[in-house]
Amino acid sequence: MTKRSFAHSLLPLIGLVAFLLVWEAVPRLGLASRVLLPTPSDLPAAFMRELSSGMWLKSVGLSLSHYTLGLLAGLGAGVGLGVLTGMSNVAEGLFAWVSRVLRPIPGLAWVPFAIIWFGVSQSGAVFIIAIGVFWIVYFATHGAIRGVDRDFIELAQAFGFTGPLERLFKVLLPAATPGILVGLRTALGQAWMAVVAAELFGVTGLGSRMMQASSLLATDIVVVYMLTMAALYGLMDAFFMAAQGRLLRWKP
Amino acid sequence: MEAVMKPKLPEYVIDIEGLALSFDQDGRRTDVLRGLDLKVAAGEFVAVVGASGVGKSTLLRVLMGLAPHSAGRVVVAPDPAAERPMALVFQDSRLLPWRRVVTNVSFGLEKAGGPEKTRLPAAARRERAMQALGLVGLSDLAERWPWQLSGGQRQRVALARALAVRPSILLMDEPFSALDVATREGLQDELLRVWRQTGKTIVFVTHDIDEAVYLADRIVALGGKPGEVRSVRAIDVARPRRRGALALQDIAAKVKADITADAAAPVEDYVI
Image 1 (tube, rainbow over the protein chains, first blue to last red):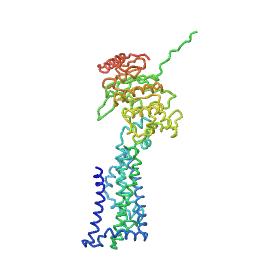
Image 2 (cartoon, each protein chain N blue to C red):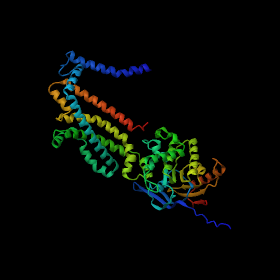
Image 3 (cartoon, each protein chain N blue to C red):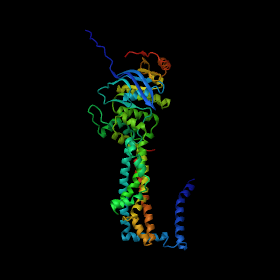
Image 4 (cartoon, rainbow over the protein chains, first blue to last red):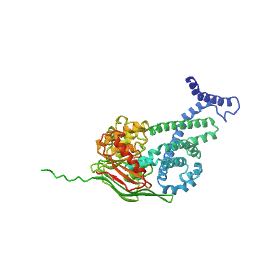
């Protein structure tokens, strides 16, 4: 039993090693050009080059700041509007068609306006990221607030919490937190995609650095940044899970 | 010389006259309660019984101000020494799952109340909550989450939450109906002890007539559709009572008959 589960836990590792071996073998066996497909063994050297030139830290730092600001802006606007339309039928009615029109527009389609409004600048990148995050968080929050058990609202009333703000902070927000966090977790991944998209049009960061490297056929550096993103996302998700575990520690 | 005793006037904390309640649903008018009169004296334990759907819970909601009534007069004159007029214990304990037991109990204290209309500071709220938990014998579970409690414990926490705001009147909406017999009987005795200790007025809604005759001073039987008062009977059986005592069974049988009988002039078999 334990032997079996131990072997089972080794499977992902075996799979990863096999994947790396195949990857390494394909260019070495001449099946693909090493320029088109860098091998894993090329990567540490490429990473060290980027690190020592200072480009890696600079790109990562800028991208993280776009990511964080965009995420916070989208989260704030999404939770705010989601709470408003979740609590008020008037607000929900007013926003119904507006959201139906704007919702399907992909974040990338906003790039022209980001450039016109903000120029090729940090704020432009933040704007693109925030839009993607906003919709996900907005719908999650709206649904979670609407879904709060009426009985809890009645309980709050019975103990004298009759105002909308009291209802919001005593009952609605705590009860809706799990639902809002589900949206936030999705947005956390979505925002990374938006970071690359937002930086491809020229704002300095991971995305623009990747474009530069690829135009010089420095594919090993492109892969370094791809893996950097994967690592950063994994780190974020781990932080998120820890924070969520703390926020939802009341759950069985 | 003999002192002249002035007859003590009954002091009603709840005085309902001609209460009617109806609501419109899908364009159809549904009457829930009709012509309901009810007087409750200070410190009294009144049980309201009747079949489900007769409007028992609605009556409590009207008293709490959670539902509007269509006609009639509802006067609540709480004990001025109490901090809140009323507190309600729901059938489902309705504990907030994101709060620990102790903060569930102090929930109502987060609203400014009392004669000075001020909000207690956090430390005082906690102290109050611990006192209330002590009253229902659950001090040890203060730091638990609601999901870690049994059904009986949850109801006791709900009772503590209602007691913590120091209400004049305790309204209870079938609070023990979802519990197994042993737990229910334990909680009934516990409620009687709390009632004796605190001297609160209790309006206890239940569909279980045996529970009503065991607990209450008076039983108000509702029947019909829309619900109306079928009888008001005093339970002149000394406390502590014995479950299933003949005198109690006798009254229970009468109440049962009152509820199922066709509409008749309400029976009033009591003197305060």
